Every structure is written in C-alpha cells, then in structure tokens.
Image (cartoon, helix red, strand yellow):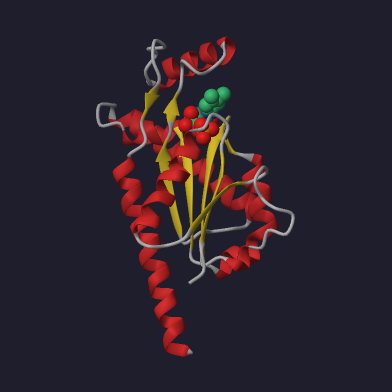
Length: 199
Ligand SMILES: Cc1cc2nc3c(=O)[nH]c(=O)nc-3n(C[C@H](O)[C@H](O)[C@H](O)COP(=O)(O)O)c2cc1C
C-alpha cells in the first residue's frame, strides 16, 4: 500500500502540530505517513504520484494562506486532482466562528471571513479539494515579538477575541481533527478496495 502525504505550511508552528496530529491518527489506522513542510522539506525529486492520498494544511496571515502552499498546489494541482485529498485551513477567524460564547453577529462575521479566505485560495490555486476543513488555530501572545503581540492584541480587541496577553490561547479542536482524519482514511480504503476489484 502506498504511503499518505501530509503536507503543511506554517509560520508560528500551530499548523505543524495539526499536521503531526492528523498523521498520528492516520498511523493509528495502519497507514504509513510522510509529514513534510512545503517550501522546506521537499526533496528535488518529490513526486506526489508516489502517494495514496494528500492531506494539505496551511495557516492564514493577513487574509491569505501561506504563499509556499499556494505555490505547491499550483505546481501539483494535476496530481492532487487524481488522489483522495483534503485541505485544512488554519485561522483565528475559524476560532471566532466556533466560539459558543460569542454573539451571533461575531460568529457570522468570522464565518464569512473564513469563507472568503478559502474562496480566495481556491480561486488562486484552481484546486477545489473534495474535503475542505477550516480549523481554529492559536493566539500565541507569549511567542510573538512585541510589535506582532501589540498588533494581534489590537485585532483581537476589534474582532472580540481575547486580549489576555499573559498567556497563549489554543483553539484547535483536536477531536474534530480525529474525525476528519477518519474520513480521509475511509476515503483511501474505499479507493483501494475499488482498485483491488478492478485488478
Ligand atoms: C501576524 C499575524 C496575522 C494573522 N492574520 C490573520 C488573518 O488575517 N485572519 C485570521 O483568521 N487569522 C490570522 N492570524 C491568526 C493565525 O492564522 C493563527 O495564529 C494560526 O494559528 C497560525 O498558524 P501557524 O502557527 O501554523 O502559522 C494571524 C496571526 C498573526 C501572528
């Protein structure tokens, strides 16, 4: 059986944690998984066609997904379209959209933001993944430098997120990620049994 590829692009590390978590869940389902950071880990002879599925994850900064992921998808779109695949879009807007304590208005505005950012990714790359999962990221106040911390605090104030800079805040729903990984595993199993029937 072919290995599965989990490919990610991150700036502050949360998407790496998400990619590793998805990979760990898939390994528990007996798949071999390679986890690779696009723009850093890919060997010169990287060939997506060697894999049985592709799981992509990228974070959002200033309304855009990581440039390295956009370039990766543009380059590999044809192979991606032939494989079972999924895309995980990691942002703080999704944390707002999932925040049960937020007002209806704030949740709707956050959800509209997520939709717009994903729409822009699909337009720019030309790739519509069969599974698209927005994922709540993290607000890592203790890890940001002073300027980013102040800017994020201001944005948090404007959008209704927490301004408590004394600690980091993680919003990722790890159990939801397990369910999404299970869907991917089921997709790959279905594809493999169809191929076995044909051969
Ligand atoms: C400088 C900066 C800009 C950001 N811009 C956005 C944004 O425009 N929209 C959004 O929803 N989240 C934004 N975020 C939140 C990130 O998407 C979130 O922190 C995510 O967990 C980062 O993932 P990473 O650690 O994998 O890079 C921003 C974060 C930082 C530090």
